[in-house]
Length: 317
Image 1 (cartoon, rainbow, N blue to C red):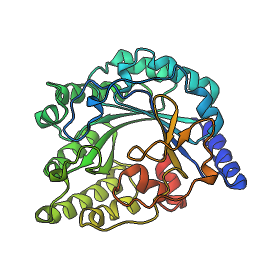
Image 2 (cartoon, rainbow, N blue to C red):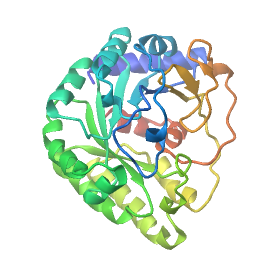
Image 3 (cartoon, helix red, strand yellow):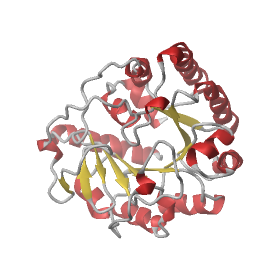
Image 4 (spheres, rainbow, N blue to C red):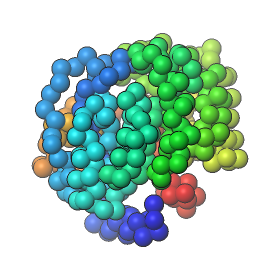
């Protein structure tokens, strides 16, 4: 980001605080459609539904600091670059991120997304090899992603990031993913697996694997200190082991500090909770805290991380 945009977002945050507005992040699911058949998600089983042609009015109403476009797979929408352009035109300062599985991503499409206004491009990668193809149901996916990372680093995004979910069967692959990111000059964002989407309890880190989890978290934090390989906070990483040990971590602020927009414009406190209203009538200032403690997704945990000067520096680079 430019210095001007950083200053503008800092001013927006100050305005939020003065007005008592706590919502900072909007995640916009532009579609439920997906070209993957992930073992831990059932979105691809759902029938296609209504998809708005413009999400700019929603962003204009809530004035968040960050908007993350997700799905489904955002790139199955042919009009996705236009959706981004409209949001960027409506809010020149908001930080725009997107998450893709990378299956139909090309260098040309990445340049189009950057020109449309995407700041951060995040690509899901849970295994650095063919195991990723099996988990996502897309042959050749891991190899394609590995081949794109170097060229993507030169497109001009504020950040190119791998999104990696910590699961019972990929902890031994995390060092290779970290090294892949380091070699290509990009970062990795980590999140703890949750079985809410598809009931895959076998992918939760087992008690027998807790020692490896401990070593993995320590490795991530060391790589963060030495190479700035991740923007994941120590606050978040330090509680990953608690979560997989069965601890109920309180303090979720879903619907208050962040919210999920459905493809049709409904508002959900988070991706795993029901729709509570539409974007025109929803007021996060009146939202009540949720009692759910079932996940330790990064969107939840990072929203709870204390806002310190060190944390601000990690986020803005």
